[in-house]
Image (cartoon, rainbow, N blue to C red; front, side, top):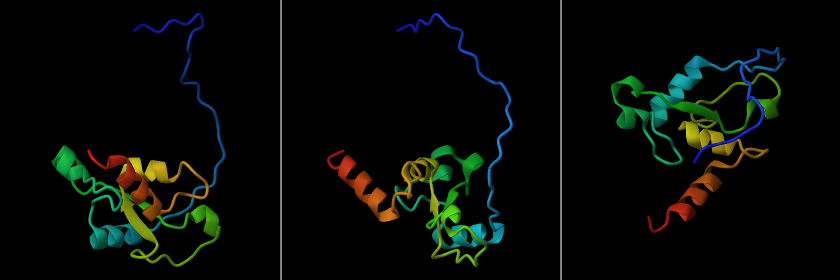
Length: 116
């Protein structure tokens, strides 16, 4: 199937955007992954198993309560406040505001994969 369009589709222009960026503790991230492992705690995906050595140990770490909601510095607990997630689950969790609950996304996946 060929896409037809009368207009040129232009991308790549640079623009300046101001955003808040919240500092994250690399130590808390490491302790979270040491505790849970580098496997998504929602769907079980493991980058190392899928892609081999190049992705061994790769995983995103999700703040169960988003830093933007806390809106101040706080003492993070790597086991109770953070959870390792794959890129897909992490993206889906943030499709809604407030973020979708971890257990709710597990239920959604379970109900959509029954019988597969």
